[in-house]
Length: 292
Ligand SMILES: [Zn+2]
Image 1 (tube, rainbow, N blue to C red):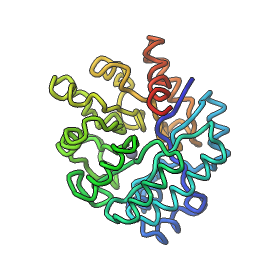
Image 2 (spheres, rainbow, N blue to C red):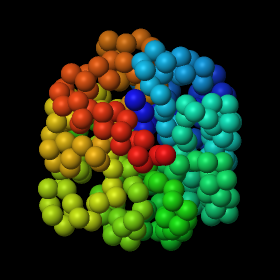
Image 3 (spheres, helix red, strand yellow):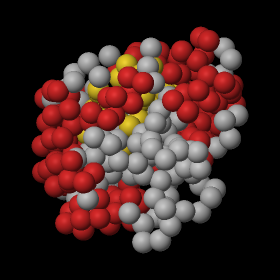
């Protein structure tokens, strides 16, 4: 059973005309990422039906619809309503995470309650540098407290500290992640994109113990790292903390693919991870335990 722990499905208006959507919602970062002024965007665009079809073709039982780090509360609301509609339409195929902008306190609290009432599993992706706050800010701490009390997980976008330059790129405060985990040791936190490889710091015994409820997803891995990262990560933190996630409909193999798909990445994982127990944990076993 395969569960993709990190996908995005943008509202209909965003798919139809991303440039107009970004302008009208003043979502500057998203706009620059999705429809760059120069160069080619790696983003693919799909409807719910196309995504379900692609899931069926690749043998994916469920995907987690990850929210976006919208800069404005109104866009978070729009995204959350869209995902609630998806959950109602195909409850067996999707889990959802809510988009939250902590700086608008009233709206953030309303959306957190909405997320709980509508069966969302967590909140995220959260990207403090883009959304204009720090993980130590009172506004965010209130969100984390709510998540902790109500059993919502948190997915944090983590940017790799060194690597290929691309635009737009916003960094991650790694020390703040440790601080957050220290404040909320029982909160389940998923660090996206292999946590920017911070998982290798679990070789430090203090970090390993502290990060007992921290998980790592593999979103966008083919764009970031050599496939060897899978076995090294298994060796560093064990297979139980790793969640297959693609970042679909992002184009993970831009030189080989013209349309987004799940299969190529899954085939690559199958190729590099020979141990069937480890493979089944990464591709779905861990996600099933975490999200059900
Ligand atoms: Zn991300």
